[in-house]
Image 1 (cartoon, one colour):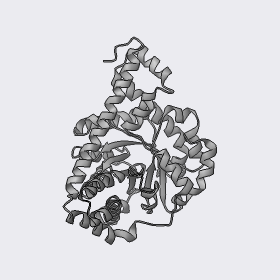
Image 2 (cartoon, helix red, strand yellow; image 1 turned 60 degrees about the vertical axis):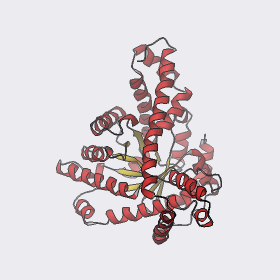
Image 3 (tube, rainbow, N blue to C red; image 1 turned 135 degrees about the horizontal axis):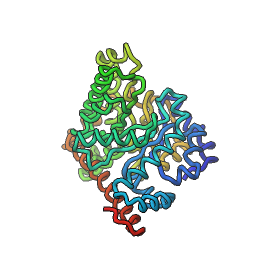
Image 4 (cartoon, rainbow, N blue to C red; image 1 turned 120 degrees about the vertical axis):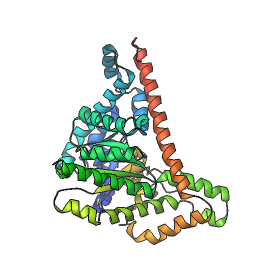
Length: 382
């Protein structure tokens, strides 16, 4: 875990990303990181200006038990269900992290200083339940700088609109395809229009869309390797960057279009920023800062696990905008993949399905671990 002194030493390297208009958010949170002062050190050094969480992160943190013993004991005495216990522990961590990041939130007018918490992934295909859970999480965390994560499933799209319309800031997660990304932006704009019609202050609503990167290469590279031709192998490591760059092109188009201008013209509405997620490389043959260095563009967020954050601070090379000049090559790279018989649509559908399933599995493992902890204290956690 990064210490306060390490955070101070690394701030200069990561500051170059900030100078290019990229906000660095840490993709990790735990009770230990909060109590040790690690997060406060990163924030105080200007290294990190936001935090994202997901079911896998909470499974690792709470599953370890470190720092949660007292709260678990209290929850056991109260006889709460395992679902309620998990909700209480995760929202407590997010609330504490939001307090650490509150000065950043204030200094940036709400743009950064954000902490994201995801709705129960088992609700990913239930619009009404997702909306209800999002409202409940916002109430439980009770901090203006919280973002509620909603997956970009078909059922998630109307939930994004409804939750945004209610004035709640949303982090849309598990975005893989360009088509779905456009639907996500549309859902956000519809939410802003609904909020405006209800007389809400649009300036208080912020959003990011988490566009997943390395998982795209992991799947397409696997298929390219099976083909094994020189042409196929030459395309390895290029699809994910191409996909993300074209997502940014779509972002520029939508948030430069008439619908957005009509919203922004008479209000303080904010663009939904692209957030690069899954930035840790899956292939050891690639440079460990690949998905950070090659996706530098103004108005974006790069959320990094600690290993990627360390690597970027240590030897990342930030050479300016590496996105907007690459649209033609990005289109050519994806077209070349398609010509080899690898279906882009099939890949992104598979990744969305697997993404939801992985989070559901992680959540179930977390529930199982907490059930065991509560049972060990002689309490029925069913």
